[in-house]
Image 1 (spheres, rainbow, N blue to C red):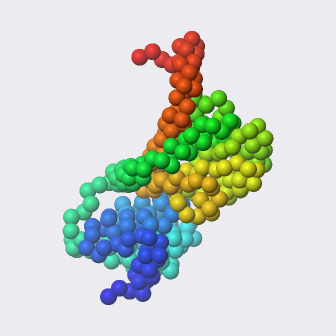
Image 2: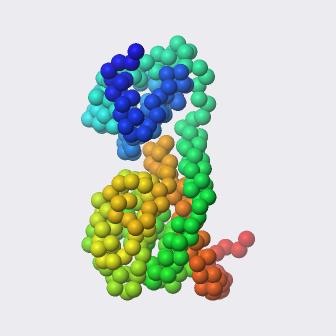
Image 3: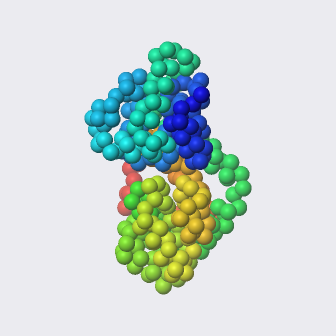
Amino acid sequence: MSSPQQARAQASAITSGKAVPAAGAAPTSQLRELFDGPRLSPGQRRIAQYLIEHITEAAFLSITELADRVGVSQPSVTRFAAAVGFSGYPALREKLQSIALSTLAGGAGEEDKANELQAAVDAEIANLENLRRDFADPDQIIRVGRELSRSTPLTVLGLRISVSLAEYFGYAARRIHPDVRLVTRGGSVAYDALLQCREAGGTWVLAFAMPRHSQETLQAVRVARGAGLKVALVTDLALGPLADEADITFATGTGSRLVFDSYAAPGVMAAALLQAMTDADPERTQARLEKYEQLSDQHQFFLKD
């Protein structure tokens, strides 16, 4: 019979779409299932990693001792316990102790052989497999690529952690599109850029919004829509405030096994949209790529193989 704390954790897991850890699973697998469902901050992921790597010892630490070992504050541990579905650290520790005791007793079967880095790769492979299934019907990608290709200027928005994806897309898009404008600063700077793009004749914005989703991104998307721009959004969730504001949303999973997210699937999604843009206007694409190759040779942009 499960304890009240375990019942609460199970209810929270069901509500969030997280699988309830199977009692007979390997301890590492049980912990990963327990911690994978909620969206944890980088600091909370450090706590999760420590617990996974030191479960037989960490399960018996006080909140003060655990905070010291991880290098976080006691309130951070309390917030972590709540984030993974428990009423507080004592309730979480009770669950951790049951997992640790099964480990010490050898009752959990063969331990998961994959370390945390391998588990992160496995999670990204799963994200890519999901994306592959989504690509079975590429019509929406093709349509949006055509619209992005026609929008002159084309605005690419990415704030905070999403800057890297926006810069990658913008760098490549400039090779095949005559006017790509990158917006990587929020607030009034973003608003000015978006309004200027609309006044210059732009019709679409491609926005990247990776977790943790920022208020700045939501406000920028709203400004773009208010100015008459349409928004194609690449993010990790098909539902939520950002998706509600966008005209089209491409939801792709992010890797959340490590302290900071990894973006294998969003990166492939960005490349797929670029491919759709190249196919939308092949003559322009070929002419611009050839011109760029001539410039790169003339100015020796790249090392010779």
